[in-house]
Every structure is written in C-alpha cells, then in structure tokens.
Image 1 (cartoon, rainbow, N blue to C red):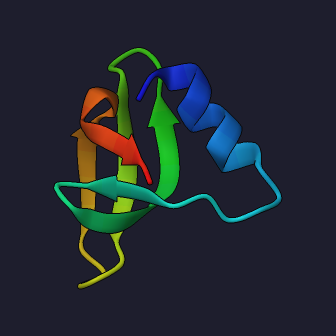
Image 2: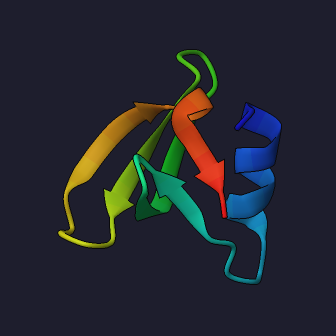
Image 3: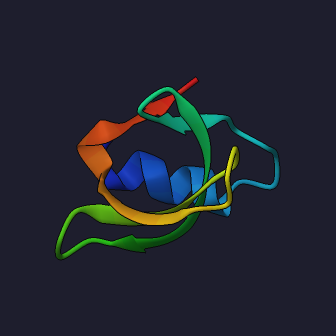
Length: 58
C-alpha cells in the first residue's frame, strides 16, 4: 500500500479492512518520512510499526 492510500483509509468515515501478514489491523498513525504505519493487530491488540508496502487492503 502506498502512503496516499493509507492516508485516505485513515481519513475515511467508513471502515476499510486492512491486513498485515494475514492479520487484520487498525491504522493508528502514518510516518511519511519512514514510509511506515503504526498499527494495532486486531487479533491480539499488539502495537507494531510496519512498512506501508506490507499492508494489504482487503
């Protein structure tokens, strides 16, 4: 996923499913300078900072 799409998802009023390593995640914050996102794994509430390129829109 690219930064612009991740930003659109975060700003959306609807719920858009996103996954990281086949687990659903919630986007918390974006870092354009590092091209990463802070996410929460919805299976176990683990907080991670992951590369945007590894996020998938479901």
